[in-house]
Length: 308
Image (cartoon, rainbow, N blue to C red; front, side):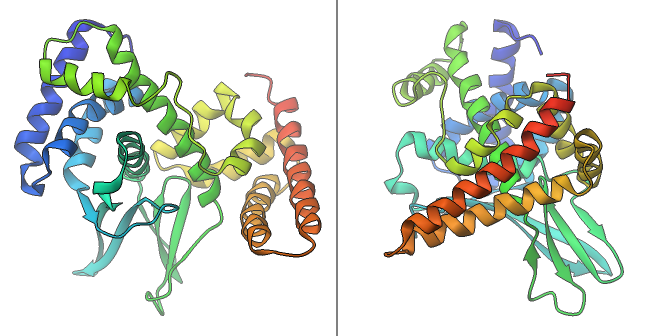
């Protein structure tokens, strides 16, 4: 969408009205409110004004909860909790931000955008059901709840690719916020918030989350046409079509699932590497081998996918 001063200022008005009217029930403190004034417009710009209602409804339906528990690795999360009411599956969603008071402005913005981006990409076609289980979708991945024992759900391995794409989109949304400084903004409160952010975030913001896995998938992420296709499938909840789409391009059966499996294994190998005191080179060679295997799949995809 083409942005101009008039449109941007109207989005700020909409965001402030949404926060003061529709989100008042959540009793957010002023810091959270001021960030939402600019985060909501950035999401609308990212996903196009035609999806404005879906974006606004996500912020209405998914509250932020502050948890006073410090965790430098897992700083925040989005969750959707299922329950069965009148034989229908209902979900209660929220975003948890851990130890808010100790966060830098950059960390807080990253956390809020990252988790709401998961939520926005999970609203459509969230629930799927088969004979043995039902599943809740979070972007590209599903959490499976066996009908015989819903107390032991499990997440499929695609969560890693979900995190990689979500991290890239988080960076893009932060860059959109940075671009607001190029426009004439009428609201001084917004101007002050943007000034605080500008002094905290460099241009072209980059996240270090899932660094190895993001490096492996760098060429995939740089394929703009592919990312556009995957992003549309993810936003619209058509993720069951992705393996067929990917395998059809590579010409290799099960190549998408193999890539997902390799990415999942790199996570385990990284964790073991950090805990290993002896023979670390063996683990490092294993990680390099996995990197090479994943890159071969990605190179095959890119070689056959000519629209970049």
